[in-house]
Each structure stands twice: as structure tokens, then as C-alpha cells.
Length: 316
Image (cartoon, rainbow, N blue to C red; front, side, top):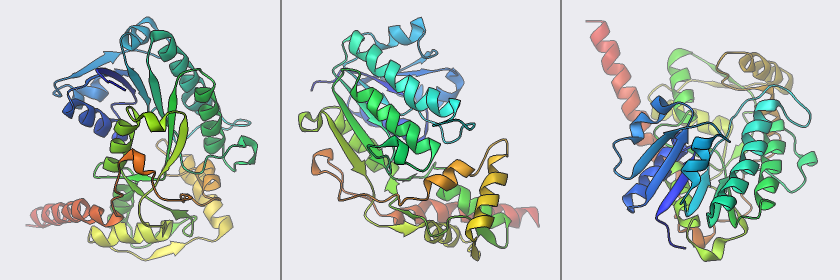
């Protein structure tokens, strides 16, 4: 499939920034719609990027889709108010928006959508343990039913230099002598952001991938407790991890979920009832050689060194 112009929804975010950079490196024109242009200012220096201020469904979005050969959907949220089967924020971001985007892209003449979902999503939404996963499952179904050729990717937890996962746990261990942790035994197969970006770009063009749903995961499986411990050790601030029993873990998730910027929520707690582990290796047609979690030691150790230097200057 030939690509000259691609729209990336969520292109200003963590994964989206890497996807946009890879597309630009191939000389492809990239359109990034965003409600807040300032949030995409780091993309403006890239030579083939056009940032468009728009809201889903308005005329600016429709204009941005015109002439696009393909669309990438990275839009998503981690938290929502409660609802049955999911809350309004999950419905808007994970179901309503993908349905609208895939339909609008088909009307605009796009040849494919690459929709990024989540590992753990199954074919029966009612059987899934959290609102997040149920909304992701219904979003996948909406994309499949829109009539536009698709590739759906299901990544495990994504890590990288700018992530809010390993970096957050490293920062917390600088602040606290002990780290209480809910669901410390939950299992994940973390995947590097660069590998996810490569898979997305390749999925835009590979004819063999059309109509398929594929998992994205790294080469190793870790418990949440193991990953948190590594983040502390690699950043130079290893702390004891207190694996909370079930009831205390539920309480911690509920308290953290009430914060203005939640670190965790009761719904996240529910999501971790099932393992976030792939059923097999990454499909070779995605062109990815999975990167081990150990690469994070490079940037986490630099963070620790910078903090030590700042502390030394402060005590002079």
C-alpha cells in the first residue's frame, strides 16, 4: 500500500510522537489533529507534519481526513467515571470516537486504519473484568464493522524514555522509604515504544496484515512488583516493595483513583485480574525484533545521576 499522507489521532502523545517521527523519516506527510495545539508543539519542527486544531466530528477534522491514504488511531484514556458496562470517558474515547473515525476515514477515501487497542481484550466484552477492557473490546468491534480495511494491534504495557510507568515508579522510590503496591503479582510483558511505533508504521503498508488483530509484547514476562523493583534499582533508589494483600490493594486503588491525576484506580485494579501476557511471539510481518526491558536502565540511571547532582548542589 502506497503512503503519501497519514492522519495520526493521538499523534501528540507518548506513542504517537514516535509514530509521527518514523513516518516523517520516511518522507510521509503526517496530519495530527488535536484539541490543544500547544500540546503538539514538539512536533512542529518535523518537516512533513501538519498540526490541526480540531475536535472530533467538526469540519476541521473532516478537512484533515481529506486526501489521507491511511489513519492511525492512538486515542485513549486510562481513567473514567463509573458506568455499566463502562463509564462515559471510556465510551467516548474507546468506542464512539473509533467508530466515528473509521467511518469518516472510509468516506474520505482512506485505504486502511491501524487501531491500537490493548493486550487482554477478548472477543466477549461481558467476560472482561474492567470497564477499560470492555470499552476497548467494543471499540475494536466498531472498527471492524465500519467497512474500512483495518489492522488492530494489542500492546502490553508500553515503556520508553518518556513513559509514565517506569519513570513514575522510579520517582516514587526517590520520595518514599517503602513502596506499598497493589497487585504486585500481576504479570505483564512490557513492550518498547520504539517497537510499537515500528509495528504501527509497518502495519500501515503490509498487505498480509489487513483484517488481522495482532498482539505486541516484549521478550520477557515480569510481575508488577519485579518491574517496580527494577525501576528503583536502575534509577539508584531501590526501596523495599510491600506487596499489599487483596483488600488493602483495593483500598489503595480506590484512594489513588480519587486524586486529581490518579496514579491508579479501582478499574486499573480490576484490569490486573487477568495476565497482560501475549499468547505467542510478535507476528514476523510486523518487522519487529522485541527490545528487552533492560534498555530502560540507560535513561533511568541518568535520571538518578541528575537527581544526585541536584541534591549535591543544594547542600553546598
